[in-house]
Length: 394
Image (cartoon, rainbow, N blue to C red):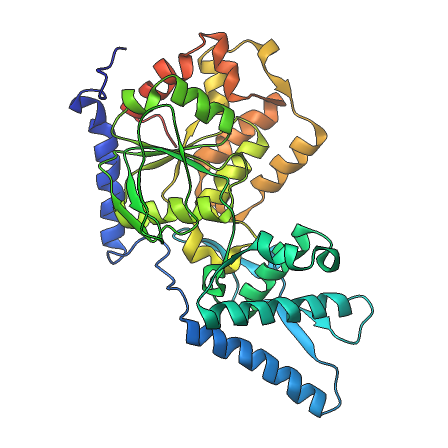
């Protein structure tokens, strides 16, 4: 299949355009709003008032000679998660909570750290300045102990105050990359023009200013190595107009926000390209339906319109990929696969279930690189173009 340098002929996109029309029709049926709605950012005054209420509760407890307690929704149990096909995984309205007590040896340090970071957030919001999670960690790295501790506390505070993390004026450094037909403006006014060449740009930490794209689709690529290979193969130019994104494995918050923003703004078809293994499927599910840990912010992060383009377990047999290029499922893989099959969203995805059952029955997995057995550029030259042209997604 040969393509002009500036992309395929218009007829190539017929099925993609039909898919987009069906997505738009489903939005109209649902009232014309993007899937999952749009949870607005909390205003600075609202965030400040929420923090002041928390501090006031502490003062009241002390005045009563009681030990102050933080009460936070429990985000580690599936019992507290509800699923809606149009939103994804979100916190149940009446969920169990956990208490972080100031008079308990087990939690007193965590209580103090939450109080410290609340104080820092208050100053950031009050002065209209921003800091990264890394900045906060390095204000007292010995006290915090690790970046993970800071990350978890920030998520706890966001959940406790019931405001999106960005409203806390805390940013995270992006690890994701973008390439393709897209222009956007960063918060500081910098104009970014993504290209279809071999160079990608970093996902911005503030994606409020996406302006222009004529892309026919967005391709989410699980791994950076595959993303770079597609760039080297000039895939973006051959499939132009399109956009490619990678979160370099499990996506960070900025990459998920970016994908969500693209969907809410342009409603173009979004596809995932992941390894045919439980880890790849898990990553795809995070983009589509969200994660348990961030379920309290599902409306800002999930894109249920995402479709699975590849690598499908059924593709391995269809393309006669030799067994020696496949990898046996480990015990951990089988446990992960069993866990995914039990999740509530699999019920409304019978084709996904079928693919996962193929994997479970074969007890084998495959990386996208397995396609190089057919030819070094099979992925970009044959596999993806055919899938996109003929609707090979589920």
